[in-house]
Image 1 (tube, rainbow, N blue to C red):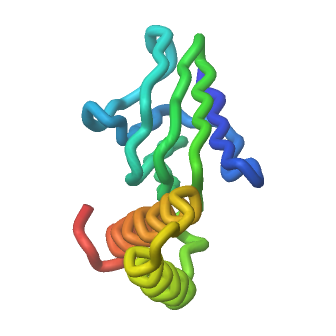
Image 2: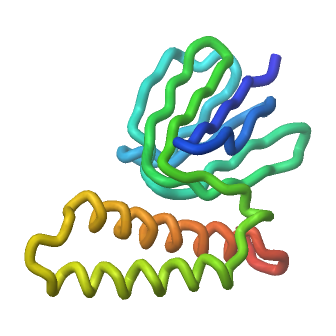
Length: 143
């Protein structure tokens, strides 16, 4: 029986489907989940999620969050997630450049909003993850 996988961000459902196995980056290292896995709740680190189904692998870039495994259901709640096939490197680089500029500007301002700085740092972190995942998913590169 396959795993039912759901990956949710604050603004959308990034993935919903079945998988034979799931590999996730946690704050303690990478974990693999197969059907029948013990119940688990863990902190997710920014990185790559691999969903394997019938010999095909779907890769997603995800930001920090949480994973919960109960029975054969894997639920991920994360700040950001995108399928590697949908990553537009030019758009990622533009967002990263704007965020980097805004972070530098905020560092020189007195009374900069810490929430806004944290959001900009999240954009930078997720941009870096997307570049890494897209590079790994590109044809001709070794896994």
